[in-house]
Length: 73
Image 1 (cartoon, helix red, strand yellow):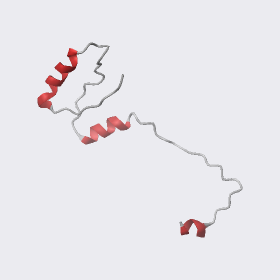
Image 2 (cartoon, rainbow, N blue to C red):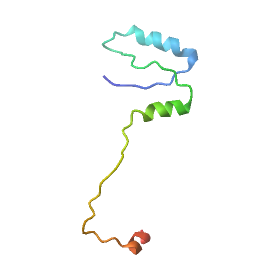
Image 3 (cartoon, one colour):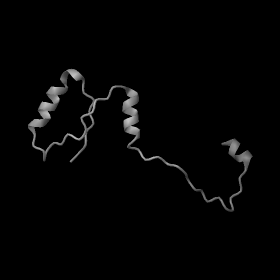
Image 4 (tube, rainbow, N blue to C red):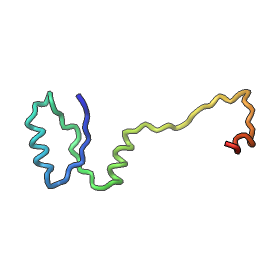
């Protein structure tokens, strides 16, 4: 199966749900039927599903850092 995320205007929401319910549960599954009220809510919902990188370890033993070379880049 594939997953599709839709943002549906309130005026046609019931029609879309009716259309999806025509299909069998093996063909179409409604996973989330929540209303997104604002762009901020949408972004918060999306960011909760993204794994965040907390730290990173770099092995720099034996590497000579040259500030002038770094500034030239």
